[in-house]
Length: 231
Ligand code: GTP
Ligand code: MG
Image (cartoon, rainbow, N blue to C red; front, side, top):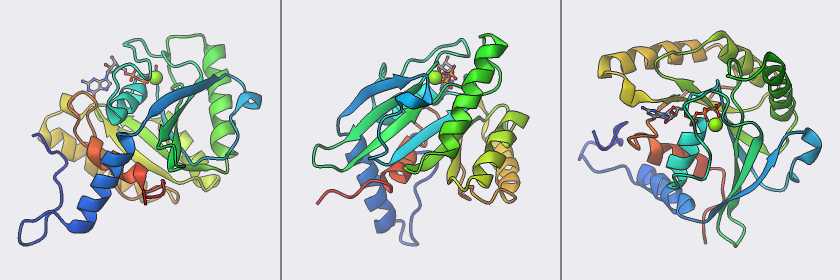
């Protein structure tokens, strides 16, 4: 299953040209430089809002940092761990060419359960919510959901908040390599149905595996839609 989810084809079996162009733009963008800019523990340290931001949110351990590494093709850019609570700051990365076709990727600490004190979790959650609600250059939040667990109360809480603040978000299922095909289809159907009542949610749910690279070209293409195309 080298090419999952399937690349759409037209009736002649050729890859649709518009889809192919989007995938190519994504491939091109993520082949550009990606550098760590800064880690932020307080909102007064945020970088200026001069570049579009795409932010990765999700419960602890869903695979946010791993997916950023898979997207950028760099295994150690964002730090990952088996222990929930690895990412402890808002980490900003600059992705793009020097001519200004750039974006920022933001790796967030997990919300909900983490192997750190309740106080720390509460502090992060407050920080995340304030950032997510109040950032004009935040173009899209990728809300990552572990495909084995589906949507949990903490996810609904974040999604409700994004709906209310009119912040556009897309659900990205992670770790689909851990599920059988029938199980994937089941969680995809459940999440897709749930999304109908969330006004700021993009209707498409992406299925990904950072480990196998599945769905990564498609997610690159969705993100690249927020960056200007190269001349
Ligand atoms: P926090 O920063 O603690 O919130 O976690 P995170 O969401 O950044 O998760 P991270 O990327 O650190 O990954 C957590 C664990 O899940 C690690 O042990 C990863 O190796 C594993 N993992 C991440 N993505 C995948 C995947 O696609 N497939 C499998 N099988 N494991 C994955
Ligand atoms: Mg992390």
